[in-house]
Length: 95
Image (cartoon, rainbow, N blue to C red; front, side, top):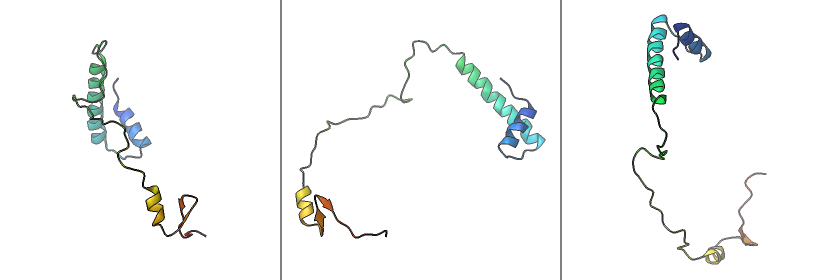
């Protein structure tokens, strides 16, 4: 796929970008080279290649999902200024 200068100008107009003829020509050259690179990459046979989650061989170290802290809810609610039915009561902010 290659773009013409008119295509680039139309895209720039749709994006509300003002371009001169020289800028449109330079952008056309750059976009066409990008499209050529994409076409080259799509031509590569990737059958049998497993997809990667990351470009490098990195692994996330995981730990066991185990609770390490004790339940201190009762202790925290005992020192709270106002508690009702296990909920902290706060002053009304919005009327």
